[in-house]
Length: 488
Ligand SMILES: Cc1cc2nc3c(=O)[nH]c(=O)nc-3n(C[C@H](O)[C@H](O)[C@H](O)COP(=O)(O)OP(=O)(O)OC[C@H]3O[C@@H](n4cnc5c(N)ncnc54)[C@H](O)[C@@H]3O)c2cc1C
Image (cartoon, rainbow, N blue to C red):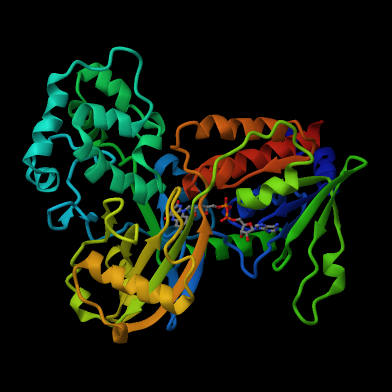
């Protein structure tokens, strides 16, 4: 038996009270890690529901994901958690083939080329590539084969690397739609080494960018696909529900509608202040400050900073987090049965108001079955440095805009009468891990937090966007705080 399970340590664990602030995936996972060893845990969530960016909504009785809809298999961490929670049987891969590209100057919409990496093609003359960048673009991209590889170090900016070696058309028409859709970011701001690990090294080895992409594609074959994603039958909300049930079984107290307003450190303990609930008949005692031996802040950055600022010195600035909106539409539109744009559409930046579209009933078989012949389409708005076009609109106007954008992106006229139901959700996206400088900025925040006794911090703004980043990071951070409280 490990020393961590000794009776003395178990007794010490039981004396700890950990308050988790925020009930997104980061907070839920951190709460579970603390509760597992017998600590008393209270989880406070400001909104009425757990899950944060994982959000299930009902559209005419059909449950759909209005936020995160899948998880990356990279690292195996999310899948391991899903299995532990008894959801292994619900795991499914997406369907419907690749995405399409819309808004190509002087060319019709086309499928995203096969065999590319972040949009960078291995062969610029391949038919599906040339259709998008034209002969001129293809010949310019071919120069990559003739130019000497970079000799002085490597290029950190993905946009600059692609632009200098393969030209503006590859950067703007193939790479920018992918970085906008996946990272809400311009390719110039994307860190090559984070977004495409091994690409710079392969370029130095093989002498051209196209060659490097081909080499990495060949290496990926036969191994598990690096960027593969999986989903859950019934939606990602099931992961939140399973975590909630697990936390309750561990005796965790979960409070929704509990927004934390202030953290105070008093005599080696925390006092956690909660805003009084505005709901009628709310229990006044529920707003009494909580005393805690440890606190884990698990909110998005804009809420986290004011809570930790007074306790953490030298907190590095992290740039603006993009605000995005997702409008989910339920459509009575048999003309979409043919899946005209596969699983979805990415756009050339500047060509459309919407950033991207997912044809969810094509991508997820379980949703197609649940929708009974109708279609679910998600339209996303907003990106780094560009407010969502729907932000200033009321729900009806936002749905109308999403419908007209869906028509344009799917290449199928859709009438307002075909709209059965709509849902609009707003999110603050953490700055993607792949932004240049993001890794260093996050490390600085972490280092500053570690110096504050009894404080932990989890979530996408410190771990990087995506469940595959947030989950293992929350486990590690909860473990660090646990160890510091039990051993120090
Ligand atoms: C539209 C969208 C689609 C996405 N799709 C995917 C995907 O398919 N796959 C993937 O892996 N990732 C996806 N992501 C990213 C992923 O969802 C996030 O990285 C992750 O869910 C973030 O979790 P979190 O716990 O850090 O924060 P959040 O989910 O933001 O949770 C923070 C919680 O804190 C609460 N809170 C805030 N302030 C307070 C306060 N003062 N007191 C108490 N509680 C507070 C909030 O209400 C919220 O519930 C997507 C994100 C978005 C927005």
